[in-house]
Amino acid sequence: MTTSTSPQGTGGATTGGPGGGARTTKLAIVGAGAVGSTLAYAALMRGAARTVALLDVNRAKVEAEVLDLQHGIQFMPMARVEGSDDVAVCAGADVVVVTAGAKQKPGQTRLDLAEGTIGLMRTILPGLVEVAPDAVYVMVTNPVDIVTYAALKFSGLPPSQLFGSGTVLDSSRLRFLVAQHCGVAVQNVHAYIAGEHGDTEIPLWSSATIGGVPLLEWQGIAGRGPLTADVRDDIAREVVQSAYRIIEGKGATNYAVGLAGTRIIEAVLDDEHRVLPVSTLLDGAYGLEDVCLSLPTLVDRRGAVERVGVPLADDELAGLRASAESLRAVARRFGL
Image (spheres, one colour):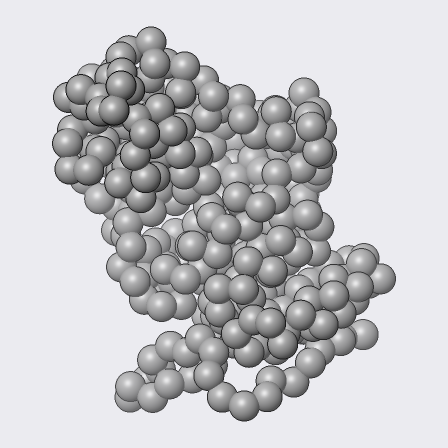
């Protein structure tokens, strides 16, 4: 069964089609849990797509989420909202975001989630690709790097067309903490987390800037101290631990990841050519291959199309390689 509401009037997100004509855009979200439903809400509030479709095996849950969102259409950019437990609801999607998977419990690492979620990807991806073969696929389900690697194998899609949300959220956490320490707006901080979305992730301090000033040369303003090695270590630990603290306190992370996912969706649908640290299959970059992890990457209507060659300090390169080896070990454990 499918529930939907029809769009009224004109407007909403569009993207240039063949010949330059505008066409409506469709976002499909697989999984109507905390992350999927929040991502749908964030995408609707930002006017990211003209149609938002939710897919979930729990018919009652997905219908309730759709109805709740439909009732708020008056207060957001006009869109169509639909949902079903039938994969056909995703037909013709321009972007498919996969959030379905095992729920992370307090004290459980992202990698602990891998086995059940990998099995789920094996089940659902063929049907999704059948109804939306031209969509760009964004994997959000944890452990996102392993899930992305498995999804590429199960789907047969090229790495540019299927990639993971990676460390987009981690980088946002990093920028927030740096901005908070330095007393500047978070928009003035440019810094990335690379590697695994998880415990072995690496802050790229050597290429980070604050208001155009190299972060490692930042002297502090308004009585705020510089970013010493100890301060940077504390910030890096907090980036890793913050998700565990949120899960322990309320059971799931949803708001920030919903916004981060929407940022990726907009980069694709609006053909933004935006640099984002998404998780892609490495093919020799930094001497690494056959593993999915995050590095700054150009994202546009074609997907994750090209990695940006960010210079790495020796310790950052060593950390990236250690992160890659950790992820490879997990992939081998599950026969990937």
